[in-house]
View (cartoon, rainbow, N blue to C red):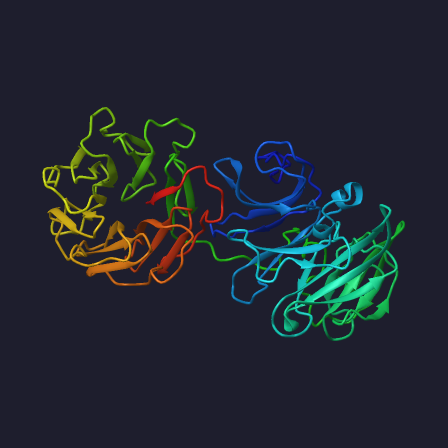
Length: 540
């Protein structure tokens, strides 16, 4: 990655050559675009390398490129450009890419995957339903284009391909996958290789057309016009002088053909635009709120407006991290480990239980309303207080029906200007309150489908939410219900929750890093679908 002055900002070792052009889109709504790119792969290197290709999503985070997700199940290289759009018409974006040709042409392997066009969801890398699809020939270099050819309001996919015989190109094809017919393939067979990216635009018919080097095709892939062009070059449509033109190149000459003002130009040039982002979408509005999630190894994942202050991900820990707490105002946060060790980032260290022999392991922490201290709680309800956090009571000497799983502190508006108090919650949903933290109810007497794993307090302190491992939400006091995942089949259990600043929404985080937003909680990204070194344990 280079900045505007060609200074290197970061790099990522693909492990093999990269022929592909990337696509860019801000999928996590933090104001910075993520990278979507394919590459070659050769068996023998560490990790997931194999004889084939790897397609990745990369994010610039903490001064380096980190992998969000990868697809490594193709037996042919990814040597192609990418295009981003909503193929399903449901708002969930996908990246579309062709394949490569190295293994099929040179090794005689991977030929089935060489003749494919793929579509991966941007958020987690999963396949779009019904994809990948078989193409007529090998989709080497021919970047796909997206546009509404059949007029049904959904995107269609167009891609070129090359017929190799005895390792030499002898012909080609252009395939269109039309959404109105459930992605059925319509093909034009070309006497030459078609490895230039097609465009989708109205160049005179009053309707979208597919333009490839030398030929103009209608939505049925019938030739309706010809011009001078090179089959290895992409063409473009756009404003030229006082009118519009179709521009191509052949040999040492650039050609410009006058065309009427286009009625549409869904994909007017290679990678869609001059910035080569691979999409015509402007991108989602930037998040105006944010959240952090933490893994058991102390790794931090930052989304939206939340700031990164540091992590314990590169430290060898004596005990895994079990939770975190952010300062009520300001960018800092603490992490707490199972042995009571505390790690501070952007905020003061006030003490820890890391050197104490505990009767029960620590399960969570909460910060005081001032941010000048914090409480730790053990699974037995024992309380350890540091900084300006006073001891107000515990269940450390009481035999509990279920172990404690989390703690929450009273906000500054509770009962007094100081809001001194805390709650903790047990696995069965029993709630224990101390100080000015009021009791508003519990699920301790109910039969639960899944154990409670955490809680969050409303801004007023007059209510709270409990969350279960299945994402079921239980509301008490002035806490409103905004939704849950209790009726969904989750890939991983929920491990924590956080309310929004207004209290009119909340986020849930799962052990695999998936984030679920409800109410006014904006979805600002997640690492669901990404390979994690350690499971997620909380958020804050």
